[in-house]
Length: 203
Image 1: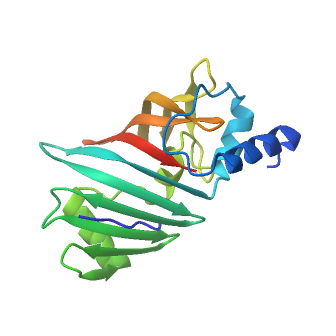
Image 2: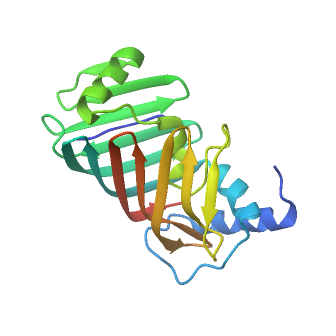
């Protein structure tokens, strides 16, 4: 099953970080230990990162129901494409999110948009995912559009985030180029738990 979701300047330090991220290219595996970078620098740099991808796995639990699936994420500006492969119906779902616009393609090739797409996701997943905010959460930063409560570790990385009724816990990170990016994170809200393991990042 596949899913496609389209879901301040910081001076020379930020410029150096942005250059390092650019030079990292397509980093799909850890490349040595990444340095510790101040949160006030890391946060805006990652929030402004427009292109990235990841491959991994998710385990979703809603009430007494649950499933596991493979996940492939591709971000290009405001457009999020998400492919889930696994026991979701006949084999998969593709979601594309672009702001308020949402489209879903089922494993049978049926295409749905907006209201119908949201209803399909609700049926397949058991909840409506916060697509706009997850685009930031997977990078280990809050969505800049709404207030958030954060907790950091000694390396200036998120260990916990609370935003828009969701709590996100970060259990581990991996060094990717000049950055630390999440390897294991868990999203929780009102009977919903989504655990994501990232196996490879692309920057």
